[in-house]
Length: 166
Image 1 (cartoon, rainbow, N blue to C red):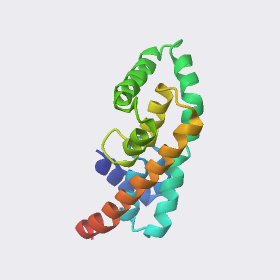
Image 2 (cartoon, rainbow, N blue to C red):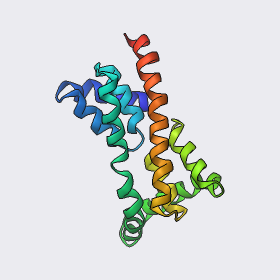
Image 3 (cartoon, one colour):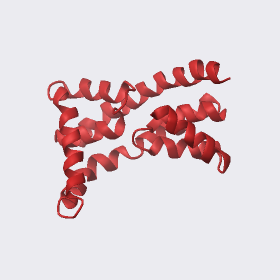
């Protein structure tokens, strides 16, 4: 799914705005994050040394806001017609957090850092919120996880994908 979305962004937005802006926007999105941003960067021919910092910044920018505000937003949503969505978000976070109750730091680091479907900084921040982790303790493994995922996806996007597409 990430590859299909990344390709769509590259083919559509890549035609109407600068490639660097496209990869920044893609990196901000949940699900896509830096993984999708790096794929888009490789597809648009953005040099790796330019793409990596843009993707990391785009990926980590929402994290503090999620960690600090998500619980309040979910509480507010529960009082509105969006209550079912809030409950689904909390249920997803609870399911994902079961494996991390012990060893939160390492669990969060690996959850964010291993680029699999449904993982990443957005979901990692949701899990940290569900587990009531202090944001100061949660932000380090999330940031390190983003860097880990960035290394993995840079190799994939620029070594493997470039050879397949190019």
